Length: 386
Ligand code: EPS
Image (cartoon, rainbow, N blue to C red):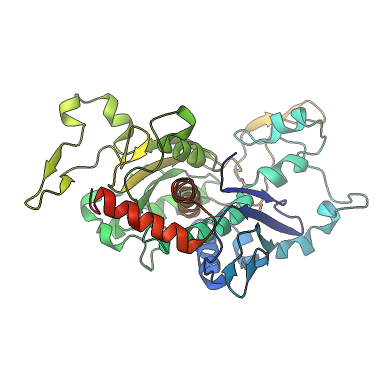
């Protein structure tokens, strides 16, 4: 059992969404406005659907925090779904449903396999939980983990790298701006690419289509030596890849140069190690993405994820009706044209959780003051920039 863990609960159009995060040390100062800021970032994004105009997600904390500081017990976070009021005919906890059933499965969604596996007749019983609305709580949990990491000098930031085939030119991105407030609507730091992405999103919306893309998450200030080479389930890269893959609609994850590593010889891939004038270790490149041998190596951790286009199309795809077993066009639920920028915020959250877990694993998780001094002592022993 890992020291730090969380669970989410709630349906997309149910009364509320909840998460319990357990295992953070006591004495961490929390600020609701910081969590709400990330919730708002998740809701923004050019190409989001009508739901985002209904919800302005605001978190409540109902356990584990007293006068703004964690107590070491489970932290319960809650976000009310304002839209529930419009869905009581289909989503009431008790009584009889009076709204229409959903029976046309969407290709690419959990719909078809879900109704069979769980012996349900209404696809809504599946889609309500598989919906990416669940990521609201991951972002709330992630914001708490980010506050923990930030108190230790560790920062998690993200950027969108591609949408619908339009790619960022890395040469145009000032990486020092990542994580700072910006007016980008797509969490993109190349304005030329962003303008082209927006046009692509408009075209897709017009055509009743949806778009996927790629985002990147970077962790700065992480000490070397989190995770371990000793056992498969202690490898930090494996935990990170698993966490990213668990985000709805993610179909690929890359750490550092990722798949490019398979194409080039070792001489062009491995990051050579040097000593500077003061005898400090440094590398000129970071193709390993900050992870070697399942451990952080002191460089920035860089992970990319590929998101498929959202499966709810306004020009629906060919599918089947689970009630009549006839061929039909898939159902049309209100949805987004593109949610890659939202997914990048979720990616930050999942990365923050994995890093927070690794920190607790190595430095303990009872009291913030102990974690801080253990980390400081360790940083001193291994050398700050190593
Ligand atoms: C989402 C809320 C949902 C969708 C989207 C993400 O709201 P609604 O279904 O009421 O429009 O906008 O959900 C999906 C993409 C999905 O696959 O279900 C949210 O809060 O992120």
